[in-house]
Length: 134
Image (cartoon, rainbow, N blue to C red; front, top):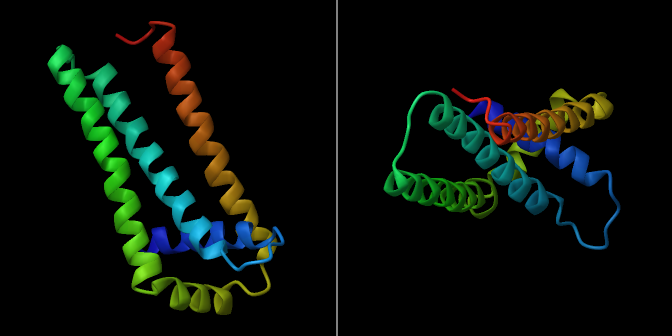
């Protein structure tokens, strides 16, 4: 859970750097973290599916339902954990004490996480589309 808290804070710091009229940075960070973790789970599941296991058409349907349900479950769990339980307040407070003098580092970590996730997803998609999997 510590790594999710840290990634949440780094995404929050990146989101906070954009000026807005309303303070919704904590919600944006929560939604974006949910989406990125779901993408990471999807990449792992897709890699396992195409490199280890052959599914029938029914298995492929259940795989798609599984991914969609993972996305919804992640969204709801993250929303409950970070926003409804107000854990975002103490996470931000603790990490701001630790990393107060390192806002550029936090933005760099968030950007690296986003870019590496998207790049990994893209490379797996290209690899699978070219038919070079098993």
